Image (cartoon, rainbow, N blue to C red; front, side, top):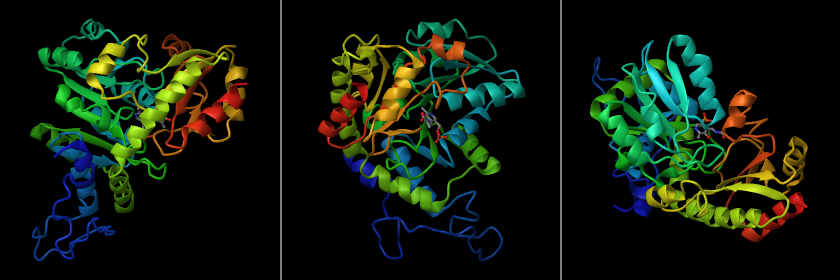
Length: 380
Ligand code: P1T
């Protein structure tokens, strides 16, 4: 099955034997009757499993070319489940530029449990190897990175993790499987904030993991059930509905993202524009190789280079909404330093480029003329 068919049909065969409904019923139930103890029709209790969630988990696995999918109550709950594979003393090597909340769970929760994190610029993947020692267990890659749009070579990172017998997890939130499928490039775990493009309509908070290895899937399933951060059936239904148009939406996000990136580059009140489709982006060649297009996320700095100038722009937009999050049909503008990345100490975030004058855009699927006119008036 090709991708544009998988988004609609992947893992959805015979979802409703009772009435052949084309969408799975929302099984709004906590529990399932048993004919005698342990004898049931596949579901016992909705933390352990729910048919609507199972339909979504199969869909997500299918679009990521994976064998096993798991859904969580948020992207961070999915990250939390991956970190629970580790033990005190273990070490993780992570992308240095990443979502502020990922940085926060690493440094403010798991460091206290005795896990050590190294934040490494992975634009040159050879840097990963410098931090590997006998305690290293996991390499965490976000690509494109949030919000600097750095690109990390997943295949080259996988060659390193395979050589050293480490797990490679890729946060595929920005790219979506429409643009890149990390398991095919050698990753072990794919993580999503399904809140973003998979859901696609800014109405659900959810996370997911996809893996191919059966024993890894079993460990993660154990954690999902034992820790219990599962999504409800209504939310699973909404994300499943969102996935059915993922290919159409991301295609338009890419078109609009490209137009916005070029507009910003030509605007005299803009300094730098971060978008992996530019030929002068430092890892454009890798983006070109591992992604089928460049996505709808664009970051830029103002020419003035001050906090005030960035605040002015994000306060003046009218069609873009000043808000956290991304990946919905509507365009959003964010100020990473004070919003999504405020939990990263100023000196650390500035090292990665998250300066006070940086603005991040999640370019939606509205008419491109309206989006550009809106940015033009805000930048004036
Ligand atoms: O918000 P949640 O569903 O828990 O997902 C966390 C998360 C993980 N990974 C990436 C790359 C993300 O962007 C996020 C959430 N990001 C935002 C809310 C944001 O505005 O960047």
